[in-house]
Image 1 (cartoon, one colour):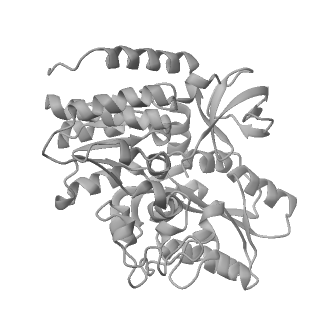
Image 2 (image 1 turned 180 degrees about the vertical axis):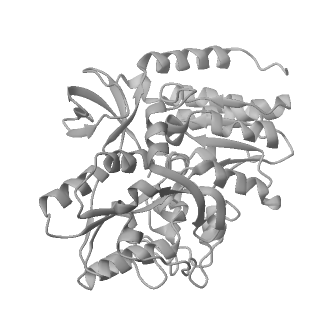
Length: 76
Length: 362
């Protein structure tokens, strides 16, 4: 139920936006809960964008993981 | 999005697993509990349990909103449908058993029950067919509740009402900690509920219960890394609240969604299927929106239902006390084609997920 799918915002019209779920799946979703701009990635749950996704944060997470995984574990 | 951002890279997964193997306790069992059907799906579908050392156990808590909806509320929806109201609901609600039958069965008997993808579709349908009465069966956790609230604030047409059955996750997590013999050592908190509520509601778990808690996303790498983060905390003897899913979860959550929810709903005690009444765990429409409350409008309120049919162990599966395969009905009389218990119905139900991935999960 709490399944949410990332999608790219193609156009915004008030509280509605047209988004692309990839491979040509387009749908109108409600963007009342987020400040979506064209080109943003949003998480869509049951027709409502619930949060903006941050590709920068995703890259940062992966970079941090690499660092952590490189370092040997030392008891704190 | 570029491939690396899918968080499914097998090389990275191997490295995380190596780390997990290294820091996992050698003798004592560590039990990590998640509370989201989508986490269970990721864990089972990708065979994550098979990658973990034998001392690390991952169990599934009550994280499937369809499964936790009590039979009494399904009975209310059925009663509405039998009164001639068109009931709209999400797809996996259709087959959830009420005390006697499911919405699908009343539909087969001639009632008007329709599946919608979203609350907005339910409202549009009511606008189009304004001579009929509609009721939207609004189930779901904090992720879904704002969408119901948005539609109510938009003042939908008078021929639609809402059978609000939303539930809140943190009270269910607290329930698990009160069950003495579950012996949970750490929580994987649900990522998409957290996009709405943020970090604060989970603070109680490390602070009051000394329970390492990590908010995680839903890709296999997210779950693996969350397990690693919890094991690290356990090894260091600390209990902290950490956020693995930073690309979607902000510390404060989605303020606008919280505010909209508070505007429309009051928090009340709520029944959970097979688990009884949990304090402050359900949402109810505020007084000023009672005109949209299907229970008030049609005078239906069912206090008790039969949650668990004879032999079914859903209540134990839902709190992670037993694995689906330990239920005597699992894949015998209870199958995805002909489910007996609610956990076999929804694509987020633990039993159904296990049934669909039998070969790789156990």
